[in-house]
Length: 172
Image (cartoon, rainbow, N blue to C red; front, side):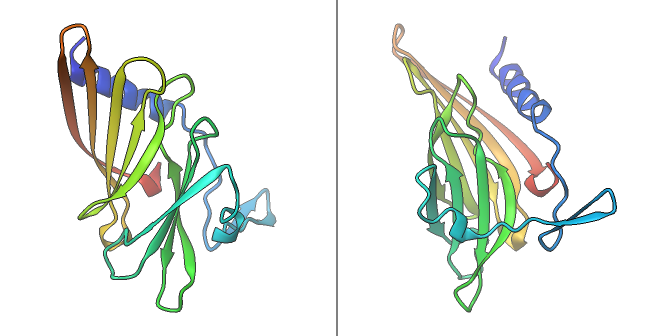
């Protein structure tokens, strides 16, 4: 199989395995005419050893934001909290860090010119790294590009495959 086919299959697999979750609006969920309140706030994750937090300006408004991610082997949850001028952090996105059971695991999240990149790596033998570029401009969180990089230690070369895409993470 060629590299693009592999990436398409990987991305299709990720989308197919997403669980349907209730749509949250203003921290309220309405189900079966019974109102339930679900609140997601940064304090839940601050001193939780299951998560790590990165701080930088995701949406490029000049105010620091917070990205919360499960640690390696503990899940694939990724949450984004946008900072405001009063020093508060408001929940803006619940998505994935692209960790896979038995596959690549989150290794880092870094700031970019447009938003951030999520880096996953295969934790055992060999070298396989996937990088997912997310734009945060105008508070729209768009997965713009996926790049896979693998190394052949037998033949001493590295293969890179990039796929430009535009997936709105708020709608997945």
